[in-house]
Amino acid sequence: MLHLASHTGPDWDRWALRHLDDLLLDHAHCEKKAASTAINLIFRYPEHVELMEPLSRLAREELEHFELVIAHLRRRNTPFVRQQPSAYAGRLMEACRRAEPSRVVDTLLCCSLIEARSCERMQRLQGALAELDHEGDPRSDPALTELYASLLASEARHHATYVDLARTLGVVDEAGLRARLHELAMHEAEIVAEAPFTPRLHSGPV
Image (tube, rainbow, N blue to C red):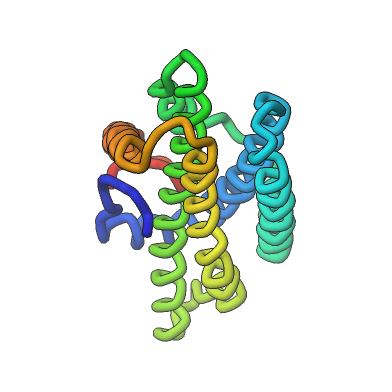
């Protein structure tokens, strides 16, 4: 279950297909940043031993996904180039409380929402690509359709992993955890709604 407070509208699918290579490039950067985030959390919170191995596994899997997306960029003759950073994650993390241990809980929950939005958008993109394949559209790319189909379960699992890690810390009860996740999801929905309509997985509007 993705704990999102808003859902992407149908117009996004058609728009995404018109910007497919740009979205694929952004996806590669997202996987790279996701791996970096997991590693940074390992260095920031070594006192939370229970986070270490799950975050290490997650970072390795994100890098594997990065390599997969890079391979598809190469196959489509699209160069992997530097990208202007998106404001999405930074704005989301602004909602994190400053004092520990609330900060680590909020950080993990924000990471879960980033993964959830990625999963939702990838699911929409995979469906749009599958429709192109079915219709025999010249833009059809079955290999890319298969890539996104293969990543959906992992993205959903990463979302759940971050929620579970926040729960594992034991600093907030279940009701408090769910309430805070909902608050942050509402904040995330506002960010997406206000974001520019650019070729990014976390662009707006919904």
